[in-house]
Length: 147
Ligand code: CMX
Ligand code: CO
Image (cartoon, rainbow, N blue to C red; front, top):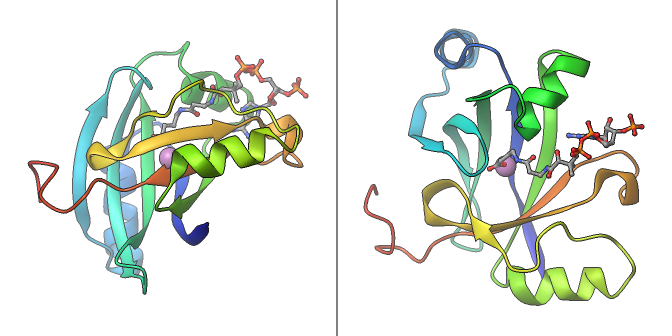
Protein backbone atom coordinates (compact mmCIF):
# COMPACT_ATOMS: atom_id res chain seq x y z
CA UNK A 1 0.00 0.00 0.00
CA UNK A 2 1.31 3.42 -0.94
CA UNK A 3 1.06 5.55 2.19
CA UNK A 4 2.75 8.85 1.52
CA UNK A 5 4.56 11.15 -0.87
CA UNK A 6 8.13 10.02 -0.17
CA UNK A 7 9.69 12.75 -2.28
CA UNK A 8 9.54 14.98 -5.30
CA UNK A 9 12.63 14.72 -7.49
CA UNK A 10 13.90 18.01 -8.91
CA UNK A 11 16.57 18.17 -11.60
CA UNK A 12 19.14 20.95 -11.32
CA UNK A 13 22.42 21.91 -12.94
CA UNK A 14 24.18 23.06 -9.76
CA UNK A 15 23.28 21.19 -6.58
CA UNK A 16 25.01 23.59 -4.18
CA UNK A 17 23.24 26.63 -5.66
CA UNK A 18 19.90 24.84 -5.61
CA UNK A 19 20.34 23.74 -2.00
CA UNK A 20 21.07 27.39 -1.16
CA UNK A 21 17.90 28.51 -2.98
CA UNK A 22 15.73 26.15 -0.90
CA UNK A 23 17.50 27.21 2.31
CA UNK A 24 17.31 30.95 1.66
CA UNK A 25 13.76 30.93 0.27
CA UNK A 26 12.01 28.39 2.50
CA UNK A 27 14.40 27.59 5.32
CA UNK A 28 14.68 23.91 4.32
CA UNK A 29 17.93 22.29 5.48
CA UNK A 30 19.86 19.40 3.95
CA UNK A 31 19.06 16.15 5.75
CA UNK A 32 21.34 13.91 3.71
CA UNK A 33 23.58 14.01 0.62
CA UNK A 34 25.03 11.21 -1.48
CA UNK A 35 26.27 10.22 -4.93
CA UNK A 36 24.48 7.30 -6.58
CA UNK A 37 26.69 6.23 -9.49
CA UNK A 38 24.21 3.65 -10.76
CA UNK A 39 21.54 6.35 -11.12
CA UNK A 40 24.08 8.96 -12.29
CA UNK A 41 23.14 11.57 -9.68
CA UNK A 42 24.58 13.69 -6.91
CA UNK A 43 21.67 14.39 -4.63
CA UNK A 44 20.51 16.24 -1.54
CA UNK A 45 17.46 15.17 0.47
CA UNK A 46 15.65 18.01 2.26
CA UNK A 47 13.20 16.66 4.84
CA UNK A 48 9.86 18.49 4.74
CA UNK A 49 7.93 16.53 7.37
CA UNK A 50 7.65 13.24 9.21
CA UNK A 51 4.58 11.20 8.35
CA UNK A 52 2.11 9.06 10.30
CA UNK A 53 3.54 5.76 9.04
CA UNK A 54 7.00 6.31 10.54
CA UNK A 55 8.37 7.60 7.23
CA UNK A 56 8.98 11.11 5.97
CA UNK A 57 8.51 13.35 2.95
CA UNK A 58 11.44 15.00 1.22
CA UNK A 59 12.51 17.10 -1.71
CA UNK A 60 15.21 15.25 -3.65
CA UNK A 61 17.49 17.68 -5.49
CA UNK A 62 19.31 15.92 -8.32
CA UNK A 63 22.39 17.02 -10.24
CA UNK A 64 23.48 14.64 -13.02
CA UNK A 65 26.98 13.17 -12.71
CA UNK A 66 27.06 12.43 -16.47
CA UNK A 67 25.14 13.76 -19.49
CA UNK A 68 23.86 10.33 -20.59
CA UNK A 69 22.17 9.63 -17.21
CA UNK A 70 18.37 9.71 -16.84
CA UNK A 71 18.45 13.18 -15.26
CA UNK A 72 21.15 14.45 -17.64
CA UNK A 73 19.19 13.41 -20.72
CA UNK A 74 15.94 14.78 -19.32
CA UNK A 75 17.49 18.17 -18.44
CA UNK A 76 19.06 18.46 -21.89
CA UNK A 77 15.52 18.39 -23.30
CA UNK A 78 13.53 20.16 -20.57
CA UNK A 79 15.93 22.30 -18.55
CA UNK A 80 15.75 22.34 -14.75
CA UNK A 81 12.52 21.38 -13.00
CA UNK A 82 10.36 18.62 -11.52
CA UNK A 83 11.68 15.28 -12.82
CA UNK A 84 9.65 12.66 -10.92
CA UNK A 85 7.40 11.95 -7.97
CA UNK A 86 7.88 9.13 -5.49
CA UNK A 87 5.35 7.30 -3.34
CA UNK A 88 6.39 5.55 -0.12
CA UNK A 89 5.37 2.00 0.72
CA UNK A 90 6.39 -0.64 3.26
CA UNK A 91 6.43 -3.21 0.41
CA UNK A 92 7.97 -1.99 -2.85
CA UNK A 93 8.26 -5.60 -4.11
CA UNK A 94 4.57 -6.44 -3.65
CA UNK A 95 3.24 -3.07 -4.76
CA UNK A 96 5.36 -2.99 -7.92
CA UNK A 97 4.24 -6.52 -8.84
CA UNK A 98 0.59 -5.52 -8.34
CA UNK A 99 1.10 -2.47 -10.55
CA UNK A 100 2.97 -4.52 -13.17
CA UNK A 101 -0.02 -6.90 -13.27
CA UNK A 102 -2.18 -3.91 -14.28
CA UNK A 103 -0.10 -3.59 -17.46
CA UNK A 104 2.05 -0.64 -16.38
CA UNK A 105 5.76 -0.98 -17.21
CA UNK A 106 7.88 -1.31 -14.07
CA UNK A 107 11.42 -0.42 -15.15
CA UNK A 108 13.40 -2.83 -12.94
CA UNK A 109 12.96 -6.60 -12.48
CA UNK A 110 14.02 -6.16 -8.85
CA UNK A 111 14.11 -2.91 -6.83
CA UNK A 112 17.49 -1.16 -6.73
CA UNK A 113 19.23 0.91 -4.08
CA UNK A 114 18.11 4.54 -3.69
CA UNK A 115 18.72 7.36 -1.20
CA UNK A 116 19.71 6.42 2.34
CA UNK A 117 19.73 2.70 1.62
CA UNK A 118 16.11 2.66 0.44
CA UNK A 119 14.85 0.19 -2.18
CA UNK A 120 13.37 1.83 -5.27
CA UNK A 121 11.78 1.14 -8.61
CA UNK A 122 10.24 3.30 -11.34
CA UNK A 123 7.08 3.17 -13.46
CA UNK A 124 7.38 4.26 -17.08
CA UNK A 125 6.17 7.85 -17.55
CA UNK A 126 4.43 6.93 -20.81
CA UNK A 127 2.15 4.55 -18.83
CA UNK A 128 1.51 7.14 -16.08
CA UNK A 129 0.15 10.16 -17.92
CA UNK A 130 3.60 11.66 -18.50
CA UNK A 131 4.71 11.43 -14.85
CA UNK A 132 7.84 9.43 -14.06
CA UNK A 133 6.78 7.69 -10.84
CA UNK A 134 9.07 6.06 -8.28
CA UNK A 135 8.11 3.63 -5.51
CA UNK A 136 10.28 3.64 -2.36
CA UNK A 137 10.65 1.45 0.69
CA UNK A 138 12.82 3.23 3.27
CA UNK A 139 15.63 1.35 4.98
CA UNK A 140 14.81 0.08 8.46
CA UNK A 141 16.08 2.45 11.17
CA UNK A 142 19.70 1.55 11.90
CA UNK A 143 20.08 -0.28 8.58
CA UNK A 144 21.78 2.71 7.02
CA UNK A 145 24.95 4.17 8.52
CA UNK A 146 24.27 7.88 8.12
CA UNK A 147 21.32 8.45 10.43
N1 CMX B 1 9.14 12.54 -16.91
C1 CMX B 1 8.25 12.43 -17.94
N2 CMX B 1 8.57 11.92 -19.16
C2 CMX B 1 9.84 11.50 -19.32
C3 CMX B 1 10.80 11.57 -18.30
C4 CMX B 1 10.42 12.13 -17.06
N3 CMX B 1 11.27 12.26 -16.06
N4 CMX B 1 11.98 11.07 -18.75
C5 CMX B 1 11.76 10.71 -20.03
N5 CMX B 1 10.46 10.96 -20.37
C6 CMX B 1 9.83 10.77 -21.69
C7 CMX B 1 10.62 11.50 -22.76
O1 CMX B 1 10.18 12.84 -22.87
C8 CMX B 1 10.33 10.68 -23.99
O2 CMX B 1 9.09 11.05 -24.52
P1 CMX B 1 8.88 11.29 -26.11
O3 CMX B 1 9.17 9.95 -26.71
O4 CMX B 1 7.44 11.69 -26.20
O5 CMX B 1 9.87 12.33 -26.49
C9 CMX B 1 10.23 9.27 -23.45
O6 CMX B 1 9.94 9.39 -22.04
C10 CMX B 1 11.52 8.49 -23.61
O7 CMX B 1 12.55 9.30 -23.05
P2 CMX B 1 14.08 9.30 -23.50
O8 CMX B 1 14.59 10.69 -23.34
O9 CMX B 1 14.25 8.61 -24.82
O10 CMX B 1 14.76 8.48 -22.34
P3 CMX B 1 14.83 6.94 -22.10
O11 CMX B 1 13.71 6.19 -22.73
O12 CMX B 1 16.23 6.49 -22.36
O13 CMX B 1 14.63 6.96 -20.49
C11 CMX B 1 13.30 6.51 -18.60
C12 CMX B 1 13.42 7.31 -19.91
C13 CMX B 1 12.07 6.97 -17.86
C14 CMX B 1 13.22 5.01 -18.94
C15 CMX B 1 14.60 6.82 -17.77
O14 CMX B 1 14.65 8.20 -17.49
C16 CMX B 1 14.69 6.03 -16.48
O15 CMX B 1 15.10 4.87 -16.46
N6 CMX B 1 14.30 6.67 -15.33
C17 CMX B 1 14.36 6.00 -14.05
C18 CMX B 1 15.66 6.25 -13.32
C19 CMX B 1 15.85 7.69 -12.93
O16 CMX B 1 15.10 8.58 -13.32
N7 CMX B 1 16.93 7.95 -12.10
C20 CMX B 1 17.24 9.26 -11.60
C21 CMX B 1 16.58 9.54 -10.27
C22 CMX B 1 17.16 8.68 -9.16
C23 CMX B 1 16.38 8.73 -7.86
O17 CMX B 1 15.25 9.19 -7.83
O18 CMX B 1 16.94 8.27 -6.84
CO1 CO C 1 13.76 9.84 -6.54
